[in-house]
Image (tube, rainbow, N blue to C red; front, side, top):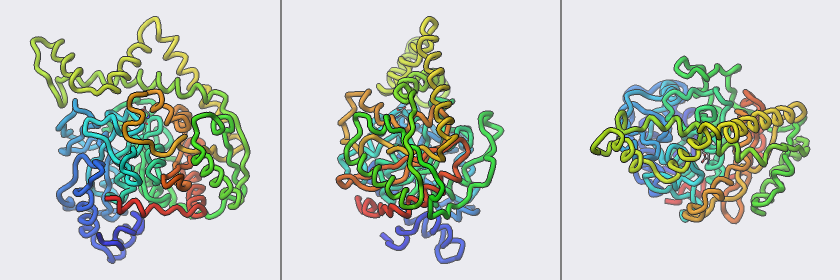
Length: 473
Ligand code: GLN
């Protein structure tokens, strides 16, 4: 590999291209060759060549795109057998925005089926390996995107986060992942999982790359009625200090059971770094937090059960022929969906059924409102809420597949922000036994510039170096 090329961050590569020191084609070919020899199963499709007209502020730095995004004429399978070989007739706005800014598609990345999962093991296209330890999961559901960036197979990647699917794999792979404010990025062309929670955001090597990528991702889109225009331009972060900043730690949540000692140690060390940069660390309570996970696992499946009704064998992908129409629907869905997707459809349909609607869905929605108001109360006195991103480091492939509840607990720290629609970033806080640990920084709606600034200051103080994962191939 060309070591100098590989060592360039995406922002540095864009700058080198702008200066004329690096050719777009050369950069594309470097990553194309790496992605094509991917041994982690991070990619489900790799481009054969760079498109002809690449121009714009992103300079030609190619993007890996989670397979949940529709890309015109390119397989978009969402990790599902039911969409095997499906090539959409149009491109998702998020992808189109990046392409228009000069970032060509390098490839499509593996993921949990319809983004349901925390390990990438729920993919019809096989699990992805974590480049830090190939016997472990990369996290999920944007596991292919995270592994590709961590292993240096792509300069940066687009992922989605409904309950943690950008932040948790970023944490487990030692990279940066930003979940936007709900609505800041268009969902048009993103294959829907839970529409009131779904968001699209960057997975990158560092915080500056995340800001640059995000700048070109945001925007109101008339094709997504829930999208809004971001109230200010996304700045490239320069902060090196946290003077005057208050970080709130939800003590009961962070001190709870199930958090590994190494994760706790790394989190404490990150808080110490923050204090060293001038921040004040206070403790806070999110009393509804213990209920957030349960509420999410009612709301998200409820929305999924409705969204996934469209996969009926008539309009897209797989069709299993049968003697009559009803049998065709049933057989197609039986063969096309994996176990976790079926589990969610069953839970969601049950939760929405008359007689149970108030008891499950209605209550979960009330919990959601309480979570959002508790977070906004904390933001009255603190700038950010900080937690570890995941209670554990990357776990072994196969370790949690038989225990859905253990899998769902991966999302303990990420789900409150998803329910509230608030932005949050995960940055690496260090290693525990050689495996990356993530730090989550969450702020109020539309505080992305401030979050990126704080993350940038902390990133410099922590000094994490992920380059050892590039040679994992
Ligand atoms: N792991 C969570 C789930 O399985 C979150 C997934 C996501 O954010 N897409 O639903």
